[in-house]
Image 1 (cartoon, rainbow, N blue to C red):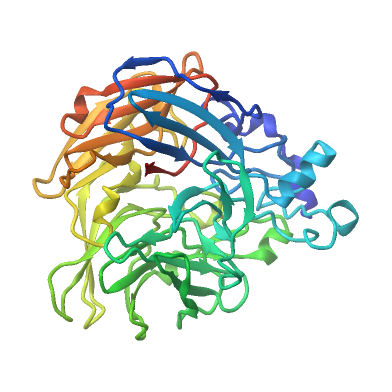
Image 2 (image 1 turned 60 degrees about the vertical axis):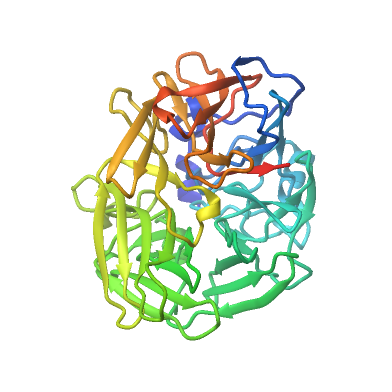
Length: 476
């Protein structure tokens, strides 16, 4: 426990616990949502989104987006109608807190952990690894994903079934951003850890069997934070920005995350056939999210193209003394990496402040054309991680289209293909949005053919949906 952090923490003054981010505790079910416009009758399935939502008032510290409990928000579409349900991901830690009626664990920067007399020996004196970042479906399993821990499996009604370690083959878990190859059906995952091995990768086949057990990545000799990955037909792509875990600093009242730009940023191209990684390096930059990656052409000497959202430095936590007075800069960037030489070049595609990028998931590992991103118009006073517009970038023409959401704060856009259509333009973008003026929340459906026209359907959600993180479209 860090007494200095505990003493000064006041949850009523934490912006990411207020307003559009404020947690909700009520779990509700509504069968028939009020819809403005028309839900396409061709869309049948579940849109589900995860995000940090503390079950009880946080203690010690709260660092968005790394702290909180997982809450899943689902909208089921069928024959032009929509229904809604939300559920907490009930981990053993959440259940322990529910038994006593208050929080037992502090945030990652406070190091408050309950003892065995409070939660038993299995949960005592350890971090609270919350599956509150992402949610994906693979091999018939819907998985709520943590930053770096075992996911939790939920059923089709979002009720928690339990921890998923893939029959014991992935006991340390995975990170929040696995990538599913749409051609092979494989789910490629990675995991970082606070003790050796610090970084591993694995493969889960289309049937849910781990066909490559955790494989250590050489060249990583200390604990680092790596939030996302990318995939090509040949490589697993991992970007190692200079963000290190510093437990010693956290114990003495500092930040658990250390930004060390003098170390630069490295990129690992890890052959999917198991050969040694190829490393590239450059000046320091940080990324939360990749867009996608692909091999530029056939052949062993083909460069890897990686699109991602780049930040000039770490954008959460960290020791302020490590940051200069320059404001953090962000934008959409394309990197080309030569797997023969390790040489990397970076080109800025778009200088708008953007985040939460998505493509048509059928293009993962292959060349994509359109990128959807949450962005800011500059017309509203928004918190970090809050956005009031969606921007679609066309990689072929180098142009962008924008839909301004007005008073709505929007989340990550997720693509739902029109059934039977292969084009990236034949489908719909989905997201939750919350009105900053009255707190009402909506489920939005936007046509990919004319996204600037705004939603073709808005379904009123009966409770406020806090701004969150990542989701998936799971078609019937």
